Image 1 (tube, rainbow, N blue to C red):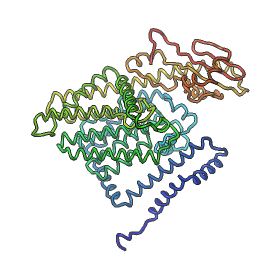
Image 2: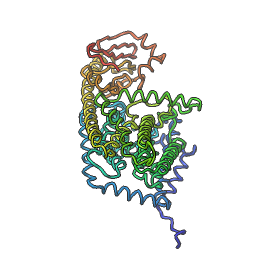
Image 3: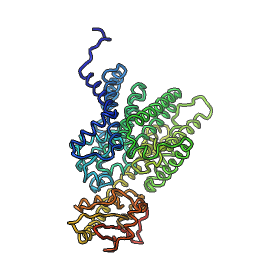
Image 4: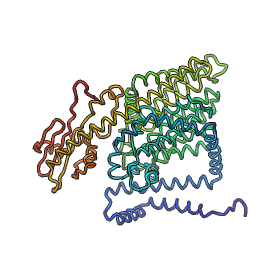
Length: 595
């Protein structure tokens, strides 16, 4: 038997049949059969059929992509070669000197920083409803990796609260990512100072929100890892292309905001090639490949895998006219830069970050091998480094710049988190000729590391204080409701207002401008009441006050229901088993907390 007549293996046939089955399931008649089976299985009709059709199509497309990826690495000659290259490169990483020691150091740094958050055991936003319902609900946002991995992490199809284990696993993934990031940018020449610099991405003030989620944090950390991994293979274009496209699709299928991480690393690697290898042609070829991979991955995800009916790009108004695109990007960029700049850390963090940013172009200029033999070579290198820094800063929001009604939250600022780490790492590793600058960069990294650890600790203590205040507020509300509501009747309840922040958290808010606390607003209060077995028909799920104000039915209830009890902390109105609760936000004037 010749090589061209190689026998098809049973596993090869299984992959092909699995791929074909997935494609068949995307057709209308197949989806209907699946939906009918699901309805018989649960004993009721499914709601929102458009959504379920989209979920089935998207999920099957993702599984088909997984089958193609597996077949590529196992049976396609190019894929088999790439697989061997990936294996050898990966082996060189974990065989690097003191790999285990460095990984443990990184993990302990992160664990120490986030110990207060783990101790607080605070239910952060989506945690509240997942703890009660056990539903994952990630697939609706096209986060198939999160959906699948959660089954294995929780060992159940319905979720249990396994914190702090889930967050500890997230920290372990972050430690691995920080090590790989350090390995990539230093070429394996790792020191304790470069390790400290690489850990900054997971300690950055904005990443605190990612780590606050009990259920989401492991998959957010995985998304960053998927975005970093391709750059291990930047010297091998075939491997880089393969891992980039696969990695970016996995990023978009775990936590989409991490797409910006890839952009930042593509820019910094391109800059390093120009400055320190003096190879402009190689640098631009690499940059072109990276851009092409990014576009291909996003197009594949958007056309074949993304579910457009939930909180993904379509719901945020993707269909923007070309004439509006520029104004949309500028609007998103303005909102992002305003938020990411002015809400960043405290004075300590801002000061040392600014110094690192100032050192960055000097580092590029002083150690550059580019433009040799030309007049003003150092000046050109300085300008190029400065341009790269500005470009990374502007593009650190990634693909979210082109999304209407985009997500301006701390957890979406992963590109900025990585930007802080790579600029710090760049400075402490490449400043060799100027001892004073190297010492300055080292001091800045250590001070940033400590400042970030302090802020994470402050955040954890804030959660503990706020948790006690929330328990007090909801306890007195539950007491009043239990005396008013007839439990033998079917009762409806509309929640409005917000409880605000505990006075003893005012210094945390003053110093660090924390704005994300889980159950302050009425939309999340429902889950707190359910925690204590208050079985009511809640007239809103996560409706915030502005949505309630726009709803005529809710407005009429507010205006017509008679007041039953009006206290310092809340007002209860009700009639005919329909109740309206307004949560008040009293503040001590001297220590008033303003958002």
